Image 1: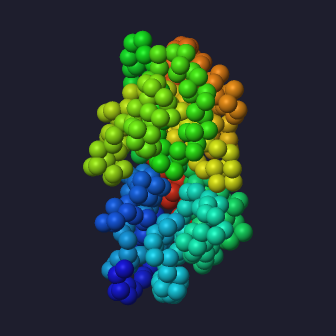
Image 2: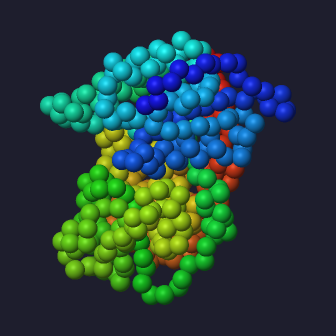
Image 3: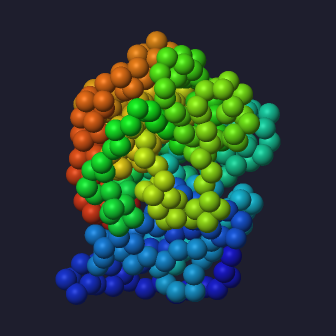
Length: 365
C-alpha cells in the first residue's frame, strides 16, 4: 500500500458546471494485481464509461494513490491479509482528510463459511468492520441491501449492467445455425459445481432422449464431466490463459460461444437469495435464451416463457430442458426478447449514470 499522505481539496467542476468526483477504487485482485471479473463489471467499467464523463474521475489500484481524491471505494475482499488494525487506521486517515469511504460488495459473503472455519470467520469479521466503518455501502440487489443494512443503514443498490463497448459485436441479434444437434451451455466457476449437480438427473434424462451437446465453461475438467455425464456429449471448453482478464474473456465469449440456450441452476439458500442475475445478462447479451432456477436472483428478471424459462423442481427442469430442445420457434422468440431487454435496459450506455447517482448520494450523506 502506498504510504504517502495526500492532501484533499474540494471536488472540481466540469465545463458544464457539474461537480466532478475524484473516485479511487481499491479492487479485489488475484496475484499480480489483476482485477477480478466482478471488479471490472461492478466498478472499473461503469466508472470509466463515457456516460459518467464529467461526473466521475476514476483511478484504481490495490493501494492508495499519491493524488487527491474525494471518494474511496473499497471492494469486498480487497485486503487478502484482513488486517483490520491497519485498515481501520487507513480509513480514519482518509475520512479525516475529508474523503468519503464506500464499501462495495455483490454477494452475501457473510452467509458463507462454516462456524469452525477460522479463516472464513476472520474474513467475515473484517467485512463487518469495514461495512460499519464506511460512510455507505454499494450493493447489487435489494435483498443484499436488506442483509447489510443492519451493519450500515446507508445502502445504495445499483443492479449489474454490461459494458456496451465490450459487446458491440452482439448488438444485433446473432444468427443461429440450424443443424440437427442442439447445443446447450453452462458457465460458472468451480464453486458452482453443486449448483450444476442439482440438475444432473434432469440434464442426463433429456440428453439421453435427444442428440444434444452440453458445453461447460469454468467447472472442473473433462474427466470429471465425463464421469458425471457417463458418455453423453458433454465437454469442458478450455478458456485460454490470457482470458483471465475480463475484457479478454468477453471477447472469448463473443467468438467461441454459440449456444442454442444456456442453463443457470442455483440452489435456493441464504447465499443465493441475494445474488444478482448476472448469468442472465451474460447469456442474453448474445441472444442466448436460458433456463434459470426459480429463485429471487432470476425471478425479477425472467418473465416465464417470454425471455426465458424458470424451473424449481427436478421435474420442472426436465420439462423446461425438453421444451428448449424440441421447440426451436419458442426458443428463438425468447432469444429475441431477452436480447432486446438486456440491450434496452441493462447495458452501461443507458445505466452508467446509476453508479454516478449512487456514489454522489452516498458521498453527500
